[in-house]
Amino acid sequence: MHTFPDRREMRSPAERETDLFSRLSQQISHAKNSTAAFARSLAHVDANSVTSRAALATLPVIRKSELLAEQQASRAAKGDPFGGYAATGFAQWGAAAQRAAHVFASPGPIYEPEGPEAHSYRRTARALYAAGFRAGDLVHNTFSYHMTPGGWIMDAGAVALGCTVFPAGVGNTEQQIAAILDLQPTAYTGTPSFLRILLEKADELGTPVTSLKKASVSGEYFPPQLREMLKTRGIVGTQSYATADLGLIAYEAPDAAGNVAGMVVDEDIILEIVRPGTGEPLPVGEVGEIVVTTFNPDYPLIRFGTGDLSAVLPGECPTGRTNMRIRGWMGRADQTAKVKGMFVHPGQIDQVAKRFPELGRVRLVVTNPDQKDAMALHAECAAPTEALKAKVVEALRDVTKLGGEVVFAAPGALANDGKVIDDARKYE
Image (cartoon, rainbow, N blue to C red; front, top):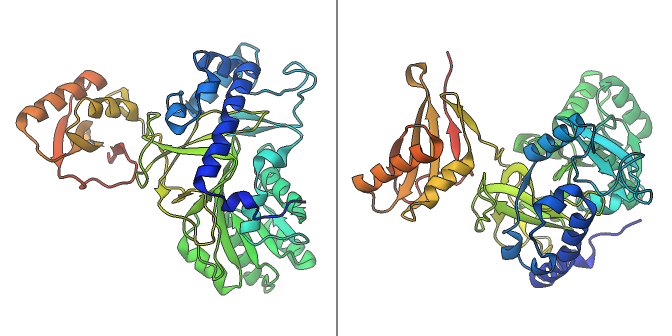
């Protein structure tokens, strides 16, 4: 059984950075030596030289779309079903001493291995503790246990805390309500929308649920209105952010009044916010793609792009936790658009912007007046000129192979929302 918060959540940022980066070189060496994919992509990297965020930022970002493509190609060739990214396996795949305990599937499908020490690298116990879960609580877990790892991810964390878990899974609403009324669980894990469905259905049946006092929700947007509705029923709802590939990434930590201020990053990952379509880290406050490096020995993902947008919040959590905080999920980073039959990627727009230091934030807006595709690059610029506009137009055509206009805006005029390509087309 694990007790939280532990001392590591309160340590100084400098101590945390020293600890993480002292472990990173070993993890990079392990990834290179144990997986075919990282042996290729990091062949040129001296693991012992990656001792800072600046050094880490020189390594390639592995995005989910690339991992999917490599898994598909490998499986088509009757090869490693994990595309060379796993350091564990089963029967035909992996050394005898490194057998996976489970294999899960995410949409794609992408297959994820899990070793026997799931709790140690799923790490959700920390988030559940922050949500108020304690040893002895009965947890009604409605994440799926079928094929996907969602149910197992939360289950492992709850059991590590000393909780008892009812593996409800998804669906079967009336049966779930009956189980809640019979067993009287104090805690819920699942999506926020399904919790609402359960509560409202129980009301409709004339059997309101009163035992639940805390809920750790994930997997979708948690609307403020629903958070407030839960409070009126005596349920403190908090949000965690985890993925099948990485385990826990960040979690809300309510103060004594139940208020939250952003999401605290987990202690056992390195999180970066990068410009969408690139691997370039962004400053505090700028919205970009979440990129995570884990210390999972069985699935050693180095600079894995989640495809999700967020931003780092300045300052520390009011609860005293000292790790960086993020604003939570703010949309998707994969903003590729097909224009006039050709794909335009966020990385291409970044290439254009980098040619002109005079430009600030940029955003490509795609429209279709008269049902014909059109592009306009909106760019912040303190001193716009017609000559500069002409050069940017030329660069846009050179990089994307498509024509488009350029619209200058005042510095700070474009929204800080991480959007690089805004597909504003309307179809009749």
